[in-house]
Amino acid sequence: MKMLEKIKSTYFLKITFSYLEEEQKLKIVKYNKNLQKVIDINLNNYKFFSGRYIINLPKGITKEYNDYNDELIFIVNI
Image (tube, rainbow, N blue to C red; front, side, top):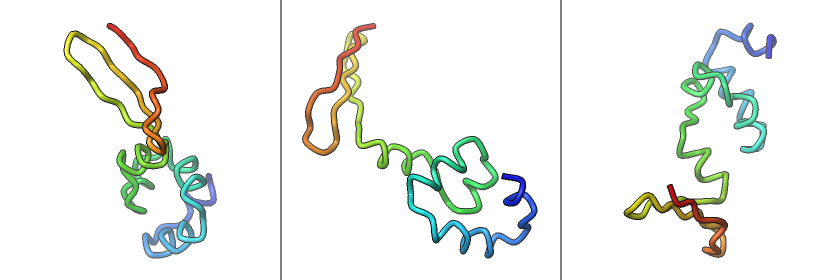
């Protein structure tokens, strides 16, 4: 990570991250908001890559589904 802090140019950071797979990018910049802004990664990237989506229903019921086959993963009743 110290190597990435030494790179000051956003142009070179974008080029460096362009060679990485999406999973690697997300793991590297998970806790670094500055890098997320520079290489344009946001919460939607994490949601898309996770392969899951959540539906909030009335009365505190939350269902989580698998994005690939719409299979129900679990239900939470708060």
